[in-house]
Length: 91
Image (cartoon, rainbow, N blue to C red; front, side, top):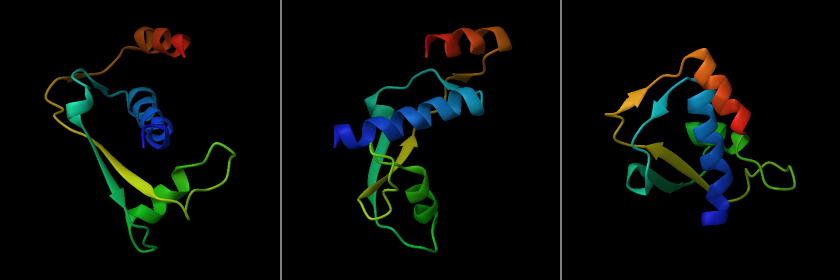
């Protein structure tokens, strides 16, 4: 399961930092909730299936999917443009 979640967790982290400019300052395994979801065309899960891709570039709609939630956002911050660019340079 670690291998299956590594990509989606990284994508979620990069999205909240670089697209939303939201930095969770207490992110550790106890503040990450992962739940296996069942695909349903009328729910958010069908949207999530289109976001999660396999290593070979195929859509994972026919594979198990997971919902990832970051908990305990009591300590958060945003980054100024310079700090955000410095963090981007690391990736």
